[in-house]
Image 1 (cartoon, rainbow, N blue to C red):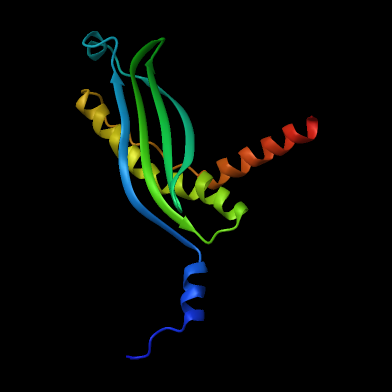
Image 2 (cartoon, rainbow, N blue to C red):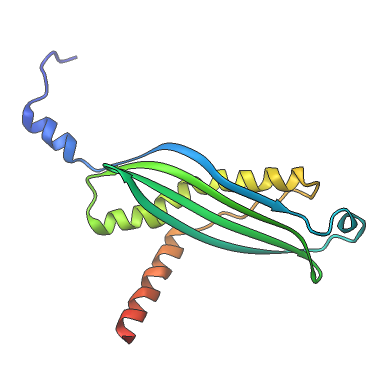
Length: 160
């Protein structure tokens, strides 16, 4: 082990090094509705799952960003809604030393992918508490969604 202190140049390089770390995961909002219970439990269960997904990000401090993953799951049994779950899963991330494009990618893909398993777990837990079969959402490729979003933005920009 070395007893020498880091030089000022080394400390400056460390401060400039890219940093991305998860500080906290939190549940911002959750809602569960089962408009047809208890009658729905007496019907044959053939669910059709609909999923809506959105992400929001904002800077809340120096190098601190809040990411909120908004997920709405609507499960229908035939024409009738079996249940509806809405979750806003949040995460606080410390992000520094990234270029604009890297920061945008981190906020749009990496951070939502990091907090998605927590949202998925919360959705499954509330569905089971509503007395329905477990609902474990499939993994989502946030990188692909991010790239698709960029391509759509570029297409809109070129059309204008």
